[in-house]
Amino acid sequence: MAILNGTELKVYSAGTTNLVAFAQNCTLNVNHSPREITNKESGGFKEILEGLRDFSIDVDGAYAWTNAAGVALTNGVDDTLETNVLNARQAVTFIFGDTATTSDVSYSGSGYITSVSMTGGTEDSATFSLSIEGTGVLTQAIQ
Image 1 (cartoon, rainbow, N blue to C red):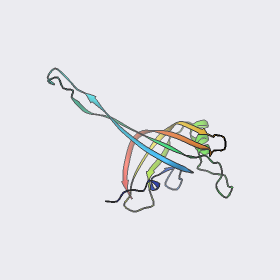
Image 2 (cartoon, rainbow, N blue to C red):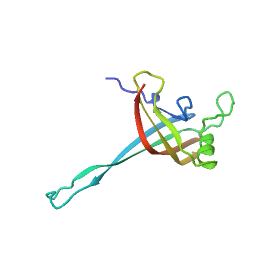
Image 3 (tube, rainbow, N blue to C red):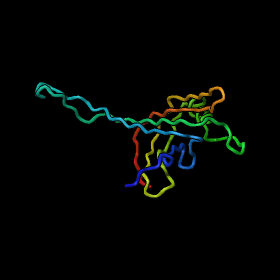
Image 4 (cartoon, rainbow, N blue to C red):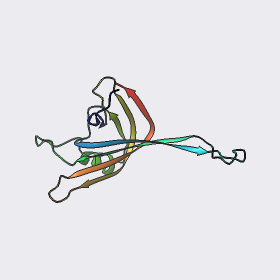
């Protein structure tokens, strides 16, 4: 059994070549909210059926606006905030997983950024975190 290295899980925005810059952690959350159908014939036990599903992605990492060569980032948290929240409240498309390795599973979908935070402590690395709430279908693919 192969255990996945966490470094292989990456979040890409706007296609497979735009990796969210300096991300250190990412989490895909998938939920299922079943609907209750308990009735007088349920014998005192709760009964449920399928219901709505939803998903979200959380990303956090090092906050930077230039790369190691001093060139301005085009995929940093600043650009994401400006493009998808401040200037227009538009959905982001994303891929969660490793798109470079054969036989790896990835998940793709669309969602809206629901929160962005940037933190900087005295003499500490600045960090960011952002959350995306999914809309529509979450699709699983095998590369």
